[in-house]
Length: 91
Image (cartoon, rainbow, N blue to C red; front, side, top):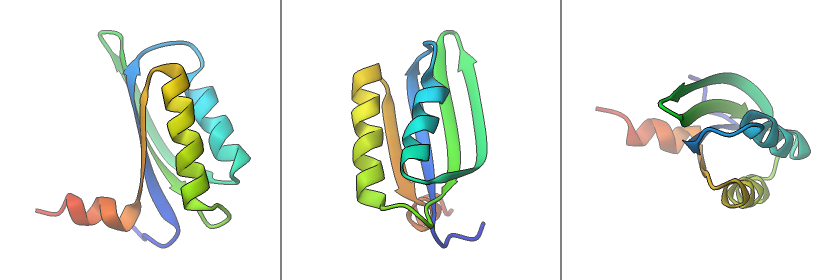
């Protein structure tokens, strides 16, 4: 995966209506483009991983807004630059 200007967004919590819409709205507000997305619900637990392009975004501001949205919705929402994520998950 090319890592320039990309980040990994993870979302975890109890499934409720509007999670994808809310996270997508925050990304739109910061002009972050969703490049890939995977989501599932297992026994009422919602999980989602997104790869986003941050070329037109300010990472710290986006991270703050995602954290705020997560707190408001009772979810864990994290964002990591892809190069850090890749380095942490190398064997």
